[in-house]
Image (cartoon, rainbow, N blue to C red; front, side):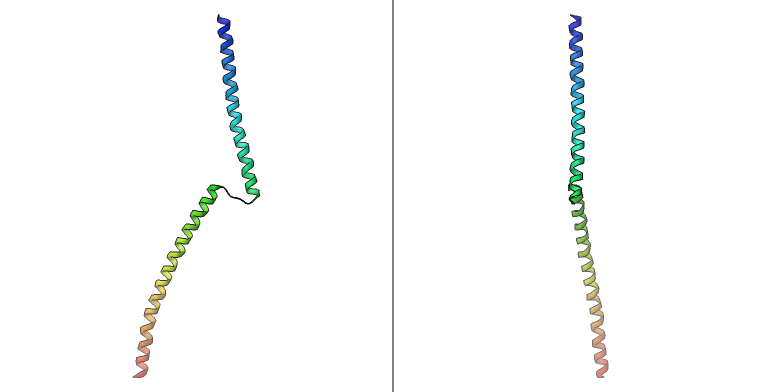
Length: 97
């Protein structure tokens, strides 16, 4: 009876080791496939999702900054116009006097 238990124990240990090896091999295969795919995409000039999302975020930030700068520029232009306009009127009235 004890020899049967030993055979079953050895068989269980063998199956456990085989499953562990298969699991490790699956992880290795995933890593190799991912590496090949990344190299393929890079060779074609394509980007990963993470790179695309980062670029989108940077673009959105740049657009917002440009919009803010345009608003500031328009304010400055309006202030200059407001300062220049009265001076022209003052010169016109001075010249007429």
